Image (cartoon, rainbow, N blue to C red; front, side, top):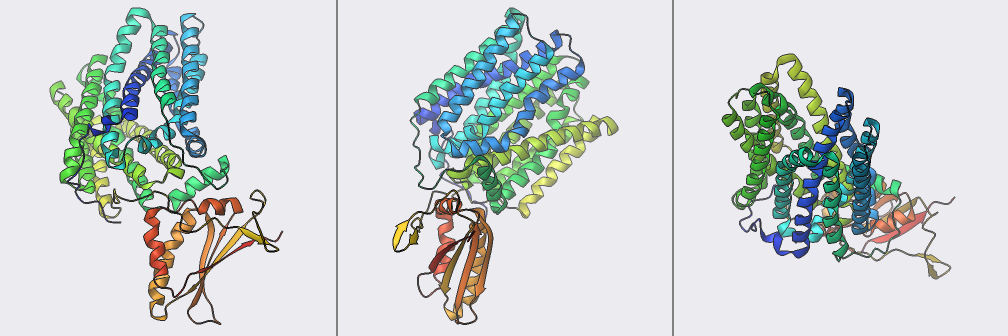
Length: 533
């Protein structure tokens, strides 16, 4: 697909707030994220207060990040095969109970370093299971035309919480102790719980059998594998994040080189967060005048220049201005990458694709942070940031080969064929969906003689859709005994999976299938063959 052109009707960034469900959830999410940042600061401070060694202090971050690697794929699968509203309510309840236990043990003086790591992991596990589903419900809360604005508002909310959460935690911990900060975090979950509990979600009824967890995970990975546009976005975001992680990974060292004070680091982080808020406000006007490719590449280039300059700036005002620009550029390309994934992914697999995207994103940040930290130890912070900036700028060149797809892709369901049934002795009856399989589907086409080449080209384009939606193998064959007769074949692992295939076609696939049919003389003949065990 060609990159989207400038959208001169881009809506105001504030328009999603007209939707009550989104507005209420955004307000509740601000409170929840402030509590989360307070908990993060409190956990780090408590670990130090318990006289734990540097290893335990470092493991606090590991306990927070590890669940996102371990649970990403199953979390995405669960988010697609169960009611998303109920899943969010469950994870919010889980995190509330863990936060209360964390606060209770701390206030009672019973906390130990090992117990703190276990409870930090448990709290983060709830967040890891919720994250793909949380992002997947955004298209259900606002119209498609407001998705970019809604994503930008989410970015503003998160960075606002990141700016004030640690500051509030410091004040509260100094005044009332870490346990009180943990209690505030527990209370912060209540707002989200109430809003989600009151949300009247429209659940699309499915006629095909429900997926198993393992099958859902395989289907999600298969969907990404056979979706070139999604693969391009995930690959580009991973490349960008590997190099862009240099700035945030080395920022504490940059702040220390200016002045040995945590206040300086906090100030630079605050400037980065404020810049992200400003960038989110500028995103919609930029998209109204420029193409998505230009906006994303521009954000990447600005961030690369900020990264390269950060190692050379030693005056706090100049560094603060650089962080302001870096934060603005950061939110631009992060938001648009996320919105493109949401736009290109149908509802049935959305949480799984977001989970794969999150896995690549987190992996790139983790690997990049370690790589740039190691490089800084060898060549110095200045040179490491310089090379990080050069690498980030180089990723903008990927836009020449992996162009961003159209924002207007229609992924609403399109079901052109009725659900297949099997005939036994003249009586229609469904076969056993649990045991039947593998299934071989054959489709016979009578092709217009002079259109054979065009037909085959269209068929090979359609092959990707067959594989993406469930086919384990695919082929097209010419009948040697009948001129211009062609047979498409594909195999599916089970009858249940083939039934689900019928619900996975989208309106965007319609043009490709119709292109196949215009080169044929009559309606194709479809046959279903089940393995003779």
